[in-house]
Image 1 (cartoon, rainbow, N blue to C red):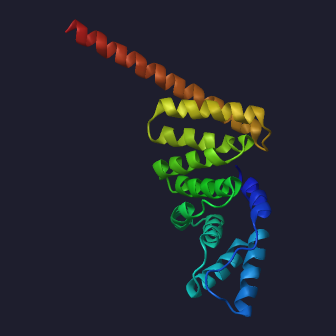
Image 2 (image 1 turned 180 degrees about the vertical axis):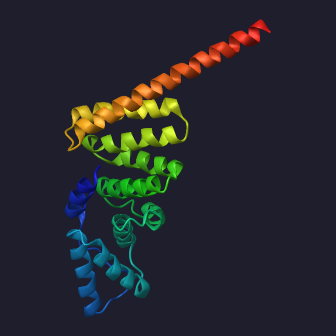
Image 3 (image 1 turned 45 degrees about the vertical axis):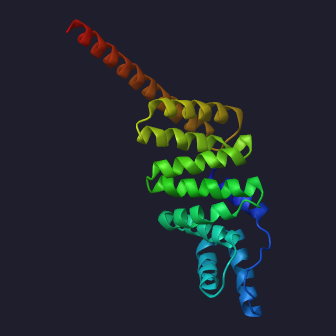
Length: 209
């Protein structure tokens, strides 16, 4: 699920949500402006308005998710991860499609700050919620994350899934990504074979002794 996929999904999913506390007319207008900025990709402007309202009112969890999305597009991945992970458990009533967007963005936030275990958890949650044609990027990120954690078996499994998904569904960078994945798979298979030979050699040495 690329940046543009997220944008397209959010454009479809955004709807008028409520604020838990009563707001005056000017603040209602600010809220409308924040949503409009968000929908048109003006995340900095949207974030300023959302955070101003957050200081004055008790916003519902969906608005906290919007703030998390803004933080992500402002490259403030640490705060985005914290905001999204804290509000996601409170969004069970929303559609799977919408929750998948938040899960993916939360996973990406953790991924970019190299907290791979946390990223894996949210990518896996996203996979349970999204459509089949949206899984390729998550599979790829999972494979990469497991490489960083030194788990060759899981990395191979997810990269092979990513490869199959990119081949089945069109992507803008499909050919380049498939080449990258192919090289990663070859590298992992070579590592796996090397480890196997080392283990066999170690076993033979022990038996000889």
